[in-house]
Length: 281
Ligand code: MN
Ligand code: MN
Image 1 (spheres, rainbow, N blue to C red):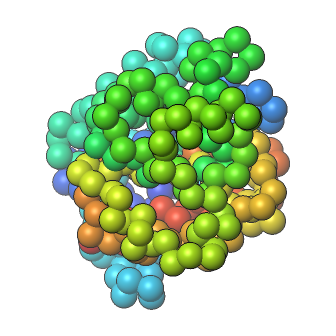
Image 2: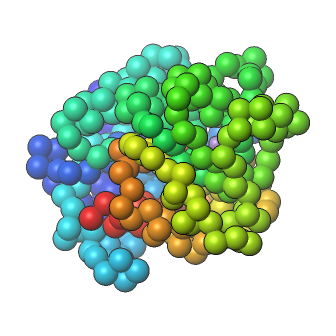
């Protein structure tokens, strides 16, 4: 069952059959430990997308002209995490099997686990302030704070790159060192010319997971777990522009939390999605 939405993302109204890109709203909000409310994000991101230009001067392309995009609306999800996850996996699988590119509007970060169960990427670009490497959190094995660790268990050979990370526990820090996770802090991104270095490490089918708290709270205050010391929106956009040519198999934008947002975070999320779409053209 779907919850229909108005306007669709960007106002794009291609039919599912004719579309190359499929937007799915995933209002998953079951494990938030601090500030719940990210279930309202898909609709707020859509609203923001409607008011942004679809022409991107950086790429010289108009996403609206170049891509056929459909928006299926929001998934109607169970309050049981695994049942909700099965539904997310099923819909993402369908989009994949139909040869279309999924854009997932979260919702909490946990949805990435179910999307990757469907897409089985070779590489995950994980943009996040947090490592999300906890073994468990508040008695939960699978939640927004453990999702990256569960992804490594789900896909033992996956090439996981953490970008913009600046917050973790001592145990998580030891875990990532032991696992030799590729890890770039905001300072790394600022001080070194990393785009080409990161892209050299990217291989195969790439999934991009963007936790909006990777941005500094000055740029995106309306997120579930704000973490000072992040990158700016323009820095993030510059980074995404370098992704042109990599083989993306799907993207999610998660953790925007509208009850704490004045529009900054949902507009940033929408703008980021346009920038990623421009890289697909
Ligand atoms: Mn996260
Ligand atoms: Mn985070």
